[in-house]
Length: 252
Image (spheres, rainbow, N blue to C red):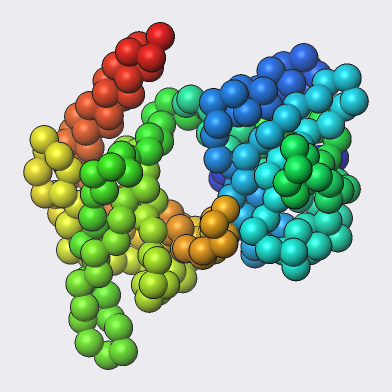
């Protein structure tokens, strides 16, 4: 099944993996690291958060966690095409499935599909994204026109790269029209201090979490970032990377 990439508009064929052994290895990597992945149906209009429970090479199947409600699982099962996106270490992983079957796995509802014949493995070193810590959430202050008056919204930062950020809008009040630009936004990065940025909305997704709650994830691009601000963002990303590596080394 040909892939319809959502990582960007560029040609991703050079990043396509066709080796079954490598595909299985990447899928098992997502499983073993307990990575959450996005499951998209209806052309990306509905997004559910799931995880890989089992990669059964002998029976050629992948088993994933089900959506939180019965009607959502039925829509998934009736979809002609379901797309998946995840992040394994620094590598973006994307694949698609045709028919998805509802099953029971270890006495709980689950979904099953055939191991894909190909997937996309994409690494962009220049715009490497890293998740920000959930234990100490960072807020992004965005002045927005809400019902005719300017209100400063304080939204949670999800991840950051030198190209932009992703934020969560739990109350779904921010205008997330593609191309919408917000000036005079404030991003308070630990050890770097507050920085002023201009953000442009590039994408948004309605997320259905495993607990049934919904949220809105908005991807924004930095506009005309100064060299000094870019250096601050780079320093913060390097700090997060060092902390992540320290935790990994501590586990080992």
